[in-house]
Length: 343
Length: 145
Image 1 (tube, chains in turn purple, brown):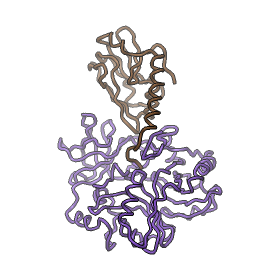
Image 2 (cartoon, one colour):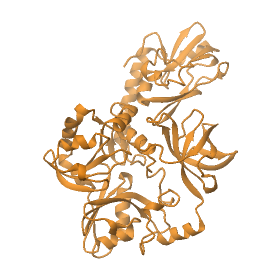
Image 3 (cartoon, each protein chain N blue to C red):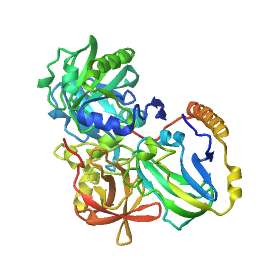
């Protein structure tokens, strides 16, 4: 167990690699209750969410969710979030654990009449059931028609008699679901899901494998690939940023950066020589520093040493040979296309 | 957890098997379990000098990297060439096939600082106790999702 953002979190149950491969091959269950939830309600809720997020909330019908960003005035990323539209005037924003209080204060600080903001993090437990067998396992326990639930859609229903919000989302690069229920039912939900899936090889999965799974799929992690000083244009998240919207926080700064061009870009790296590139290791091109690694590991699925990092834009083309300095030794690597793994 | 009797142990969780002037060095069961799945091992070259208490190599799990410190000083006689291709051997057999290097000791007095199996077992218990206390005291973790 490790302490993380005030939560006691399991790093691993039976071993990171075993858990990682269970999710890729069968299914894994994660307790991600540390994730925060902020709710926005009221007649102005839609307009308010449009203003504080980069993606276009008006495209969401009730029962749909979208990946989005909270941006500051300079276009820097306050957090990356998932916005759920529960009803026309009720939104549910899932935020990163370590940012919950920051996000809540920031959202409240920008709030306006007609949009009530509430930090409801402590009310919910969030479990993630991920992997190719996730649908089969969950369908045993619920009347919801999971086959008809498309990615980034969600429904309310009972899972083994426990009322849940069931969402076809995740952070692993596999098919799967995230389930939200009342905190006091969380433990029962966990036990029933484990019982319902153990014969199909469902395994509990800790934070360690959560990190290697998301990294293979090149999903950014706040505090590593994203922070208050990185912009969506640099992080390869321009697709999230809908300039077609008339206004949102950070829009002007980002339009300016788009015109002027970015200096650095997030890239994927693969090491050609043995070694593992870790966060903060410097990246060089012919002896000149060009950037730094933000996350890296040995990919359990691919068996190769992979990393994400920022490099100067002019050095960011796929195929470019670079070096990563690992404990004083320069190790050869190459910029590769992302993601490293795609199901 | 097993700590064989015939070995000497360091505070950094390396073990040493002494045969004459030759010391075979690896990491303990406790160390491999703390690290988790080992996926990469960095070893010195034969002939290189290792200095007591300085890092001579590194082991990496998917999650983290750890230096391995030399419990004794001397010249490297042999390295375990199978480890780079199958680093998980250290997890599977830390005291056997998972050995890391053999060193010709330059100063037999280096052994005086090392612990017996019983002393090391006690040391581990102490460490665990302190860890629990630290966990209770810690406030904020590192940023993670």
